[in-house]
Length: 249
Figure 1: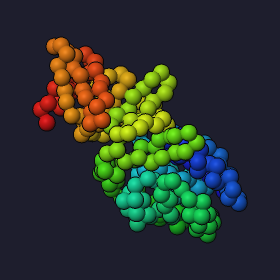
Figure 2 (figure 1 turned 120 degrees about the horizontal axis):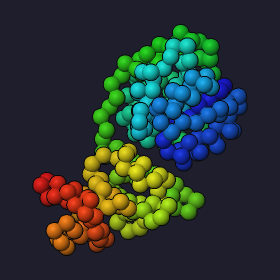
Figure 3 (figure 1 turned 180 degrees about the horizontal axis):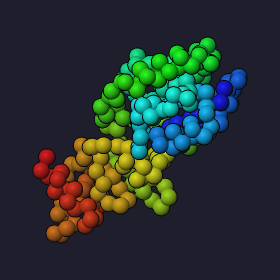
Figure 4 (figure 1 turned 60 degrees about the vertical axis):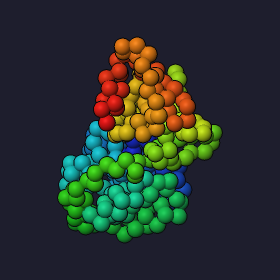
C-alpha cells in the first residue's frame, strides 16, 4: 500500500516511518509537515493509506479531510498525542487511531484493519465524509504535549512542566524545573504550535507565564523576569508590551 505520513513533528514522522518499514506490503511514498503540503502530496502521489496528525500549523487534520478530492481518497488512520482528539476522530469516521508514541503491536493491528478496506471506495468515502463533518475539538492547554530529546531518548512533556524554551544558535532548549532537554523544532515552530500561556519575551526565548514569579523594572523599556526555578530572562524592548499585558492579568 502506498502510504503518506502527515505530521508536523520531524521526530514523529521518522519514528513512524521506521516502524512501517517492518510492516508487510506497506510502502511509505511521501511525508508532509502540514495540511497544505499533505493535499499536494495526495494529489501527486495518490496514496492508498494516510497516517494523519490532527494538530498542525497552516492546516489541521480535520481541514485536510474536508478538502480531499473524492477521486484521491486514501484510507485514514489518525495519529495524535491527545486521547480526546483521537477518540472523537475515530467516532467520527477514521478507520483507526494511534496514540503517540506509536506502539509496534498497535500499528500492526491498525494496518491489518486497513487491508480489509482496500479498493472498497464507497466505504472509504463514507468514513472520510464523517470525519469532515466532525467539529475539530478546541485546543486544550492541558492536552498539549512537547516532544523533547535527551541523548537517544525522546520524551513527551506536558506543557505545564515546561517553564521556558530558549534558543542558543541552532539549538533550542526545553527548560523544566530541574533540567533541560533539546527541542525537536525551531523556536518559531514551537511558538506557532503553542497557545497561551507561552509568551515571547525575547527573540531567543518563550516563557510560560504561569511560572513567572517576579518581574523587575530595569529601565523604561527593559524588564527582568524571574521564573519559579529562579531562572531569569531579560525582556527585549520589542517584547516589552507583552510584560505589560501580563501585569494586567
